[in-house]
Length: 269
Image (cartoon, rainbow, N blue to C red; front, side, top):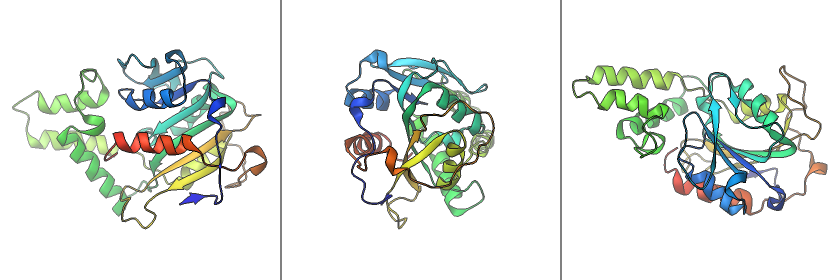
């Protein structure tokens, strides 16, 4: 299900001259999207807390505590964030920094869980998935030659490198990690993004009956208003309006390509 309906195009990929992937992991997805866009390595930026060793991308340091990204202002035309926002507690500061590095008129494509941050069935299911992934060391917790100093690997290594470590201690660490997760609904994210100068272009839902999408994942495409400036307080917006005069109405291969690349690399989350 795509809203609004009748779309034909959102983003002209020929206008994307530089690209930043927020919380890029090992950079595999980042490199694939950059290649799809026809960009050279120097224009493909992957940002994360710990350095990524991927020769196909340019690594950018992300300071999680200060919500800063080591890129100049107005530097990229496209930002992607795939299932990362729920790991960020200070979302407003992070969004403000994304606005700073994105050129006016640039785009943000995100993939997230449409889930309330409460003791709901959806939240419990997602917490269970995170716990299983931590125990099995798959997905974002998988072993990698480049992951020895990553945050998730640090959490896991505390559990697995000590043979005498009890299940009680391991469970305590898993619970602590899960409690740090901040789920937000699609509408809550939209309000946050509009408050810093974005407007919603389109939302892509799949498995709307819940049967094939138990994690309630969705894609959303936002555009930064051309007159936006970095802001540090909430600004009034018209909730949910789609500015058709700013866009040609089409969904073309960029979103479809991102979806295919992303799903193929992330079986669970």
